[in-house]
Length: 192
Image (tube, rainbow, N blue to C red; front, side):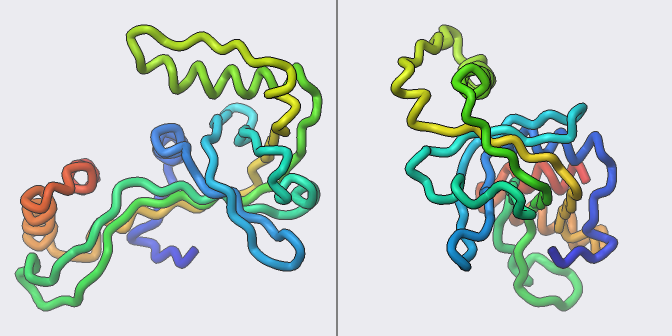
């Protein structure tokens, strides 16, 4: 991705925290000579430098993904920024947070390993509920998917949050976003 220094995020803890909070991403690879994208949730395993997930067995992406360099994109808060919020002249723009992960993928066929992946993803997302659903997957359901494990080779992180604008412009942008109801992006700009 185009990564000007003033938007680049290099703190590993910050990057992995962002990835955990925004773990629904796009898995991009080449299928039959064309770019192909699948939107899926990922488990982030920082210590192992891996992303883990699963694909439908009917999805053609899993048949050609091994051995390719793949790209996973994850996106956070984003919104349009109006020049009417600037004290100094400017042009319309878009503020956003994004992480690009490059790596190589291994397809997992072992039913026990697939069950572990699905159970871990389920536990992660069900843990937010007062009464979490407990998984009970039939063998036929697990046979309909394949696991994937991506070994990370590079991460690029970008928070384009008007760091190139004056402090006054940044304050007015946050106010404009709050008025518009874009609270997540306003909160991230205040935090940055």
